[in-house]
Amino acid sequence: MNPVLIFHTPITFGGGETQLLLMCRDFLGRGRGVQVVNLARSEEFERALAGIHVPFYTITAQGVGFSPTRFSYVRHMLRILLLAIRDGRLRKLYREHPVVWARGFPANFFVVVLSFLYGRKSKRLIYSHHFLKSPEQRATRAAYLRVLRVFDSLVGVSHEVSESLRKVFPELTERILTIPNAVDMNRFALGEGKDELRRKLSIPEGVVGVYLARFSPQKNHAFLVDVLKRVPGFTLVLGGEGSELQNFMDKAKQEHIDERVKYCGHIHSSLVPMYLRAADFCVFPSIGEGFSNAVLEALASDLPVVLFREVYSPELGDAVLIADSYDDFFEKVQELCTNLVLRQTMSAKAREVVHSFDVAVTAQAYLELFDKNFS
Image (tube, rainbow, N blue to C red):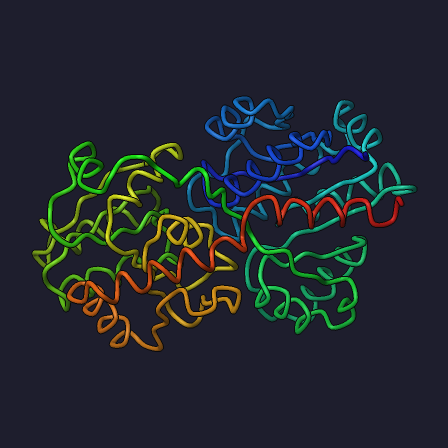
């Protein structure tokens, strides 16, 4: 079986890191060799890789933080590109692996540079895209198109992401396919009940909503202040860090709803299932997603989820509540707070749908893609 070299640019620790860990663990369990090259430093992610015995090589001591912007990614890419020329170990790894998988930006640009420096004969290059692709300026689109043409296959992590790629790059339609994100169902099958978890985590009684996401503009935490103002009678549990944290806290205090917020700071990935299982529903006000890992984890925890149509993926079916406006979002949260039968109905739908995203299914799809031209 052909070993896989994976290029990834980790943030401190997020959904992308969780997805890659799931894939690597499954690949290793099937006897597939993997090697991860980190294009940024994340000590937490490196510890997680080591914990499941995934070999990795981090090419720089520079990290990109919790909430990198596109500009900061570009700046980081320019900073590390010289390493592609100077790093002998990187050259050796590239030449030893017949399958190379670039996950997102700037990994895609980095792999293209390697392919020009060291060739791509007898190699299969895969690129996975994790967010909706927006139209680009003409020159930017032309440059991006030249990069993407180097790859044999372009993977969108949802139907909507793949369609956005096809709209921006119709020339590459035949190379674009969808392999959805995955979730490890066993990780969220806890033996402890909700009441016991709340006591352990010091979460108050009553109706509890949850949102575990980094505090960045696209995650739209500020909107949750309005939700708390409009919808009484529930506590909101938040976890994560990022550039918008202080803005949220200040606004919550100004609006006198801060006492209804339980902020838990950065939540280690091992504790995420406990916080989700302790809640009654998940609010997901994000306005910019590809196919959210957080939504899958909430569904795996049997939680009803309310989200905006702009980030809805057809793969989710009717397992989530879709809001078409801010007012509609308020109304759906109000329903979840007051209607136990609705919460139970949506929990049952979550259990039914989420099994189709089991990690074994997604991993098998990637392995078949990796070996497509080597059979």
